[in-house]
Length: 140
Image (cartoon, rainbow, N blue to C red; front, side, top):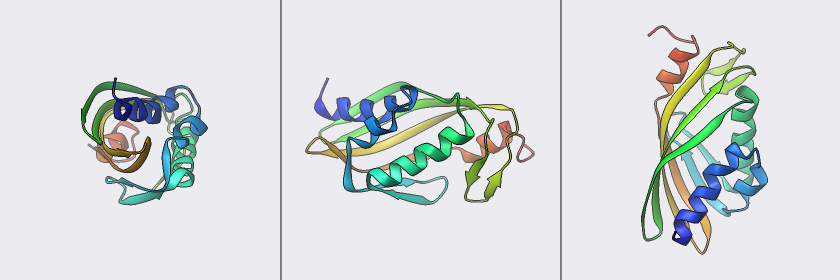
C-alpha cells in the first residue's frame, strides 16, 4: 500500500471508527476540500471536523464502506458507499431537516491530493437528490 493510499484510507475509515481526530490528523492546515453537491468548502482540520459532526449528528449509525481506491502519484480516487438512518437534524444548503427516521444509501467518489503525508485538497461527488429522495425530503 502506498503512502497516498494509506492516508486516504485513514481519512475515510475514521468515519466507521467514529474517530474524527484520526481523520483530521491527516488533513493539512490549509487543505481545501470541496463538497461539490452542496457547493461548500471545508478548510483544514476544523472544516473537516465540522463537516464530520454535521453528518454524524444526522446519521449517528452512519457507515462508510470503501469500494475502490485508485492511486496515481499524489492523487487518489476513492469510491465508497455511505449509508445510515436519519435520526438527527440534517443541516444542508437548503436548510435544516428534522429527522425522518428513514435510511439512505448513496455512492460517493472522492478525488484527493496528498502531499508530504497530508491531504492538501479534495472534492466529494455524490447525488444529493438521491439522499433527499430516500429520506422523503423531495418527491422522486
